[in-house]
Length: 247
Image 1 (tube, rainbow, N blue to C red):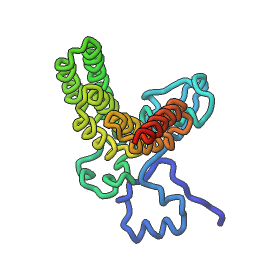
Image 2 (cartoon, rainbow, N blue to C red):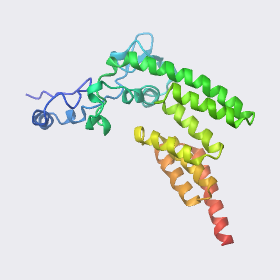
Image 3 (cartoon, one colour):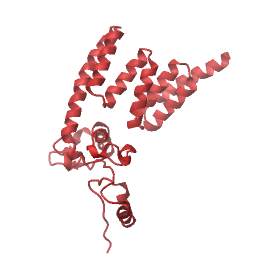
Image 4 (cartoon, helix red, strand yellow):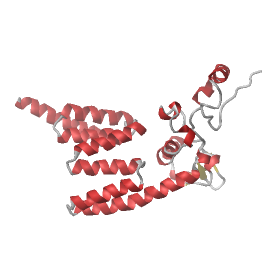
């Protein structure tokens, strides 16, 4: 009859048994990506923008602040969407679909209360980070370390807190702890470019220049427009060439 079915909000992958889900996918292939959602941008009469109607009363922005739909979608993906992976119902704890990140476990509308709590914890931790950075600027590494640990205790699942803390440990020379935090981030966000930038910095500090270049290139593939990364790669390759000349 020429009717095509598409999903608006996603369906958890356990909604149907495998046989029924397979029949649906054969009939409507687009339903194969049913385990998670992307921003479904909606614009109001006053140019207020919502990520989707399910959470239209939360974290809205103005259309005037964005040059394109791609930029707007990217904003919601980076500022809000990662929260959907942090919170799940108890029965989803050990689900193979959630663990492999092909199902987000439930609609964001059912997670708003928990997400707000998460954001509040993160904001509290960020204020502690500000104190830690002030202490570090004064070369009080020990006191700064205490504050960074306090920040991570306040928001243990925050990608921002872990990333900022890993950079502190890089600056203080504790590469073991920095790597541990970066590994934890990668398990949750394998495409987070900061992981590879910081690993590149560690490799530079250890004078492993080929590894530094490899990590910076990984980061550049994720952020192709970052000129700073291109400059870093050129600088490290120059050092590499100079060192080869001294061998």
